[in-house]
Amino acid sequence: MFSIDYLNDALTPWVIVIVGVVISAVVLYILKKLIMHRLRKLTSETRYMLDSLMVYALSLPLTVFAVACLLMVVEALLNYTGLLANTGQAYGDTLIKILLIMAVILFVDRITMGFIGEQAERHENFKNSKTILKGISRGIIICIGALVLLGTLGISVTPIVASLGITSLAVALALQPTLENFFSGVQMVIDKPIRVGDFIEIESGEQGFVDKIGWRSTWIRMLPNNTIIMPNSELSNSKIINYFYPEKELSVPVEVGVHYSSDLEHVERVTLEVAREILVSHEWGVDDYETFVVYTAFADSSINFTVMLRAKEYFNRFWVKSAFIKALHKRYAEEGIVIPYPIRALNTRQESATFTPPVTDI
Image (cartoon, rainbow, N blue to C red; front, side, top):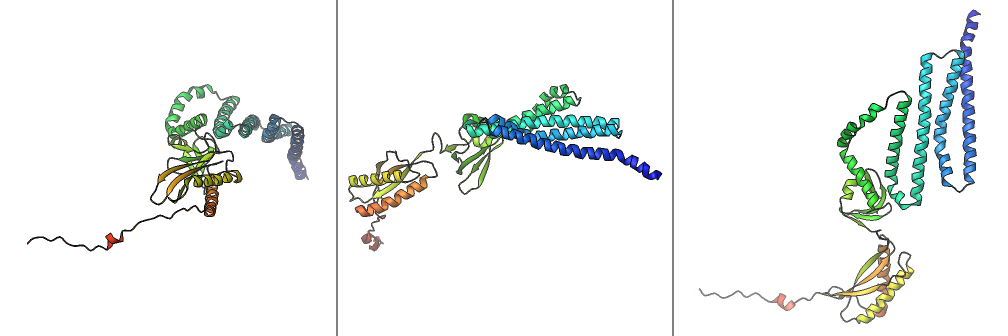
């Protein structure tokens, strides 16, 4: 009986702690759900972006804050039951401080990242620099948060700040290629030779859409749906053709040749009629473009000329050109305009001549 009573006396404090922790965890979980539900309901009734962003940013930090509160409850219960030593209490207090500071850092980070992402959807400048701005902002937040955390824990940050000069020089030398790519990315964001969504052609010949301008590299999605990842330093120093700058519309030249016996005035009139019809009817044609014909050469088999069309985007030009060629071929057949095959004249008399060797005196 003595042993059972002793066991009950020994287990009672732990039972109190466990039950208290479970109840506290359930209460904190319910409180968090109620708070988030109420805040989401309030922000859904407003048209402001900032309040919705704050609710989004609050979710994870609130969980960390609830864990810190749960640790406070555990510490209080252990103190009440006499199970907590002084050393354990010191460690517990330190852990609670770390969690509270982490909750603040997470909240600031999430609201900053959310604000940059929201502005990227609204403004072109933020869209192009979104990745770089997020990287810079997150780095600043983490550095400041780390200094605050060290100061809170009683670690002097003055020697750390003083040593940053020498340390930053060593880091800059060690990370020279990375820093070069970073500043090249910043330069491209500021100078805007390319933007996210632009269709470009780089010096090596690859073409594609700019998917992302990161702090180290730029991602270019090619037409076959694979991606080129180029370091920013190489891209900033290479020649780039931007087919979306200054605007997406571009001219589409089509080379045509007709027979020498053709009436060129009639050919031009028919060709322009077909070109205008295609530009108006085709979904990717520019319907208000004043198309024109320019005769360019007396070629071996035909009189050549260029028809200038206009497409809404670079990639659309293939379909506009294809539709124009089909319509022009059909109309030429109706009008009796001949597109000649290549002609070569063979001098059969010369080819059949026999070779007579020269007569020499012996």
